[in-house]
Image (cartoon, rainbow, N blue to C red; front, side, top):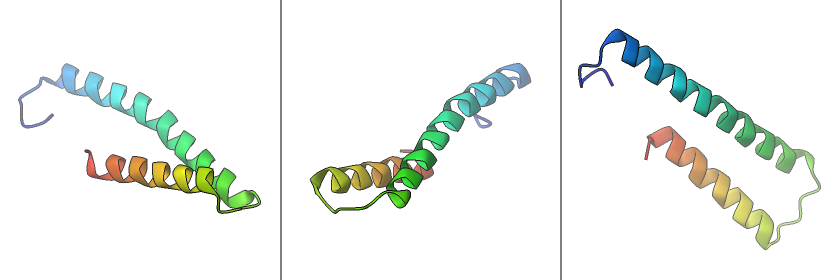
Length: 65
């Protein structure tokens, strides 16, 4: 965003939209993780799928892929 030469107004709009998208996604991931931690865990296929999905989602979010 800073390397392509956007003007100040476009940068602030882009940053605001990015934050508006990332905050609900972050809250959703925290809620899913806390639901898994507070529940009675039985390691079945749906739980393994959910944990793998959360790990892939978080890894992609951290690396920006």
